[in-house]
Amino acid sequence: MSFNYSPILAKAGELIQKFGQEYTFTRIAHGTFVPATGKTAETSSQFAKYGILSKYSNAEIGNATIEQGDRKLTAEAHGYELGDIVSLNSKNYRVISISESQPSATILYSTLQVRK
Image (tube, rainbow, N blue to C red; front, side):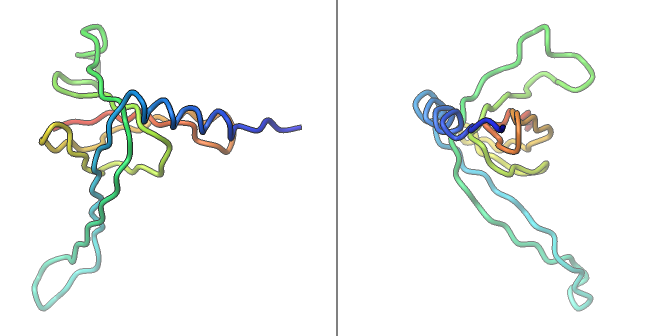
């Protein structure tokens, strides 16, 4: 017997939208090498997702993975990728770590560590 996580997923998204704000993410895809130009073709796509931005505590900062200035973004479920860029308060941050709350096949929300 499996558990239906759909109501929890809906409630998580509702709370993130209620207490967070919408952020714009940019994903850059690297294409093939173009010999004529000597460069790799790149394409970018944008998507908007809701999230709740917070700072890491002093106890968390300074360990091997969290640096001063890193931010924690609790975001609605989505297929985020390392290297995605998110605009926070007119500054661009890069996603460097993704932790998903996923009790089964359903991702309820994601916690993103972002860095300038």
